[in-house]
Image 1: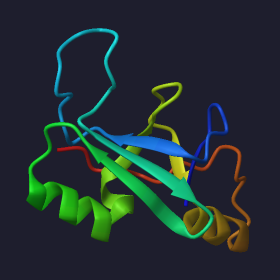
Image 2 (image 1 turned 180 degrees about the vertical axis):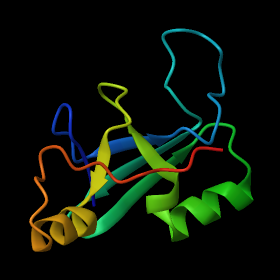
Image 3 (image 1 turned 45 degrees about the horizontal axis):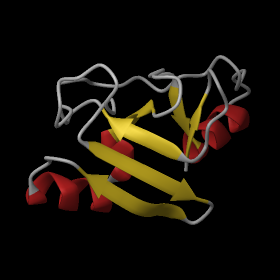
Length: 102
């Protein structure tokens, strides 16, 4: 499950890989929004994303959901990465997994 290191959000994230369906400033940050719960991805909202991308994001959410829906931060960490950081004695509050943006 993802967590925004800036605002603490654990529920809604968007993908920087998918452009917004609308270019307006009051629209969502992406055409792909994921809502998470403790057991993982709960709901996927697609606004213009092609089916192959939706299926890939559903199967591999960690590769797609890299931006906080609420504050727009890309300082997103996943629970398993935070657990690994803790196991290696890395300060969790400053740990950010490296991302490869296309």
